[in-house]
Image 1 (cartoon, rainbow, N blue to C red):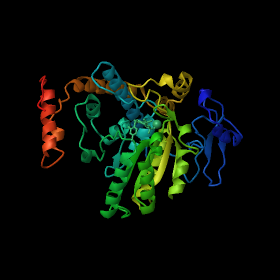
Image 2 (tube, helix red, strand yellow):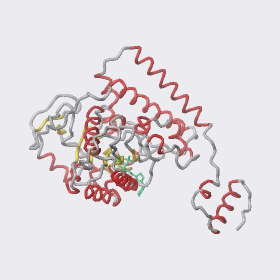
Image 3 (tube, helix red, strand yellow):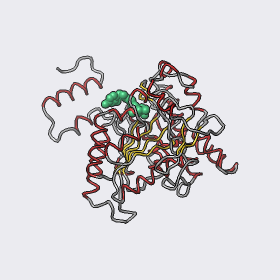
Image 4 (cartoon, rainbow, N blue to C red):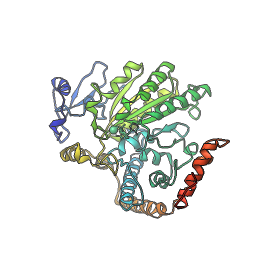
Length: 403
Ligand SMILES: Cc1ncc(C[n+]2csc(CCOP(=O)(O)OP(=O)(O)O)c2C)c(N)n1
Ligand SMILES: [Mg+2]
């Protein structure tokens, strides 16, 4: 369970509001009625990461129809199994020295697949560096995801091809890019026409840590003030590297939306159906001119922050084990009716994907060392030309470089 050293007095406020009944089982949740009529689950005892009032299918009300209507559960399961395999292969490649770094998505498959499968082709996604599951749903070749972490590209794919922008490592920066894009969507007249093939929305994916960045809050202000067609999708995975969410906020992330003037929705991020339904509703609202939504998908980063991180220094093994018991892939598997043929074919598909990544990674093209210099300015300044010459000499392995 939770490491008591991370507990703060504020968390106990939720304890005092503890609900009344409970279901059995490891997650031991209880249901409480809310004034807005939407039933929500509450953790009992209140969890350390402020995970109270999580909307789930089991506790859904009519305002939040958490149904599987438009989500193909077999496809969602296939997606989640394959992105988990992609993740495992990338970690193995990093361990073999083929990648410099890898940020694992383990535990966040349902949040990413649920959101990714709610997007229409014309919607535009702005990811962080961990959205491998969304990339998968957008149809980006998983091999392309490896390039940046192998150091062979500063991008990896054409963002226009799949309406999936490049990974952003600068926390929160891309929320403003997403808002700018949403402004352009409005100017193009692609909002509220009623044409399902024309109306578009923009989704900014980010983590709980990004909520503490100025850019993210500026993006919220602008999106709210201009009623822009943007969905802010926050995967609250509990941690921003070593900083727990409880040190970053006195309120659940979704509650912040109210102050900016748009709805905030808290959803069980380990339930692919609930995530899909919440995202679909937010996207529909955005496309129809109803403005932004902040979705807080409550989930957990089960691996260290990246392959360079040692999470044993700041969180307990018991906590990660607890979340392993709430595995989103196993959870969907338990309610899925599939035959052995489906599972055997999926195993084979996972093997093929793994081989694609293993053999493809080693053949990713080496970067042209001149490229960043060539593409920065139309006319290269003298100083940059000097730096280019030094860099090319360095890459060529000359001992002495021109000064
Ligand atoms: C502007 C900025 N500040 C700090 C960092 C260093 N940094 C990299 S990842 C990270 C934590 C981000 O946490 P969160 O937003 O919760 O995303 P997660 O990694 O959990 O998916 C930080 C602080 C950065 N990349 N950019
Ligand atoms: Mg986080």
